[in-house]
Image (cartoon, rainbow, N blue to C red; front, side):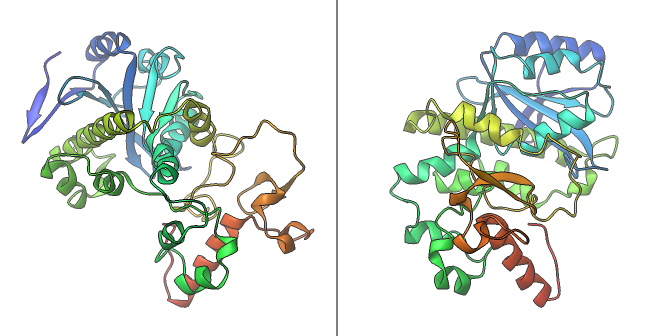
Length: 324
């Protein structure tokens, strides 16, 4: 299928069953596929999936396909879902939690298989780059998202708390060479546009550029040795995090935040006693709580939810609230 060029961005837009069949045939032959989804309140109850963006590796730029999930229904999208659920095709994402959640709840419980999440790869690379748990560098990343004075007062309660980066931030931090257009378009795009039809050109450029950024970041992480044998299992645990129980809504502040949920990167094979953190609704071992909180029968908070609770207090004192 021919690729369309808008400014310096090249992609194929697919909004018919016939064009989708051709896209699926092209992607099916690739062992690695870059995946990103776009939508309004993506993955949340009352949200909506707009685009499924896919890319396949090529020597310079990925070959990018933007699939209209509004024009095409769940049954028509099944050839793409078969690829996403295939254990034989590696899907590379950046924070794929809401992508997976949208696909699961909105399109017949699609479950991604064989996933590598580059956001997790970045977190893991910090140790390889000399940023150990509890180091000054790790704690400094938490501010200003968390109150600096609180982190400095109780640093031991933040050793396991990791600040999640965004895609653009990660690209910049790792010095990945991309064009200025890929980064500047992100600041000009209004996310309320995702369910409009026809989609504005800025939306298509934005979606295609995200695939380009993921592809370049993937190449960099492979070259640097940041993609290890455990990342696939950790990535599946991460992206499927919110696919049990009712679909989360926009007001769930203990799930919608910019801190890494606990026990994603740890070895979970050992049998350990766990307790429920009622805020994030997860069963977690003792190391995920302060001593005081672990011993509580009520008002128990894991270390991440404790940090988010303090952030909420800070926001309320400032007269505003924001999930992120």
